[in-house]
Image (cartoon, rainbow, N blue to C red):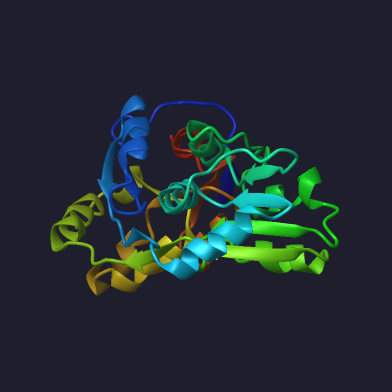
Length: 259
């Protein structure tokens, strides 16, 4: 069953399983604590910024486009490490969501983000609706939001892609799997916070065979309809859909659906 979020309640006594990249658990951990939950980090990926000349050149070209689009806070941070970011007069800067917009704002860059914080929401923004003959700078990483570039090209735009970091698979420590196995003895109060199909696939590839059935008994709170469908395809059945990928939104959806 897939449910959508409405109101707010607590997750006291629950454990939130996070698949966010290594070293990026703090926001979700704090959000979990605010609703009475604990967090177990299963990080199957790490963020590796690019530092090569080709990436610097691609970023320079992307930032000179008619519209510039950042697909994640990681893209903002990696781009800022390659060159100084700033406002360009008359050149719209778009962010996939509020977290990305705030990351740009901290660097002095004014950006717009959609109400619906996903690829579909971005593509519906006025700045991307009439783009025939215009250039779009896409600051991103390999994989991830693969729908954007083809959709923009289909609208007649020239896409200048700058991959500024990689998501690198990393091994999950045995102690983490053992901690999860303990939780799965009573999976009713365990919820997986899902904001990346790539992370989900990476975890499922690593998961011990002994956990295969019990893992799919936990709840899932997904950041979008697309991610909810990916969870269902992977065998999960208790699924809630959040309004976006922000930690508070993910946990609100879980509390509303499962408590």
